[in-house]
Length: 267
Image (tube, rainbow, N blue to C red; front, side, top):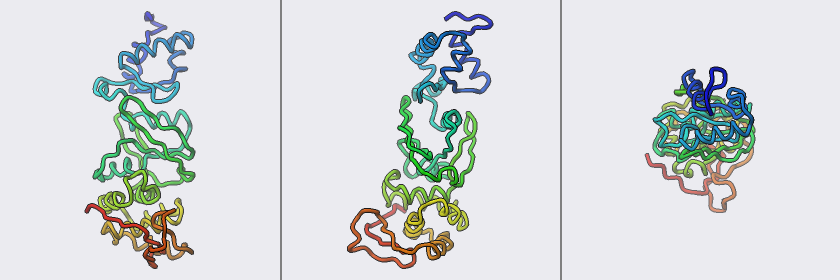
């Protein structure tokens, strides 16, 4: 596609975007800028993709891939997730092990970038980048912090909310022993008030489970207010592992918890 002053080539178009600090665009935006048909725009973008200059993490949504990320085949997830979620108008936040890394808990680097939404969404595979979406009805109410990235700002659960999610979704974090290990690394970032505020957005058994895991992680100093929260709200004992047998479980009165598995953190 030849370039004119009013009708740039596809390459010139993405160069202009990158020069202005934008690293994502939609097929509709490209079509309008190039002033061509939808089919012609698609062909032009496909040529750029074959050259490794752009990638498509979602249908109709493209990212510009700078030279330093060509071997990755995509922008890193944190550099385009905010733009993608803004386009979809969906509340989101980065959570679990991906969030823990922002606070220095990098004991186990996640193989996928973990993002919470209010509704289910299929995983994204873009080059070597993998993104898992996890549904959480209370996503818009979870406490978050904003972090800078080379392409803008991204929303990340607070350390306390991250701890609650780790207790709620251990299957996405390597299991309860691994969760306890990560909690030991997060401990200095946790606060009693923050844990209680985060607990108010989560199912009560998560707080019961988290209290026990904090003790196993030798972080009892931040669990006192959470224990008061559990005593005030919990009416029933909750299993540490839902769905597993509790016939031989240890009953922990302080957390109203049935400990039905062993937790061995790597401290």
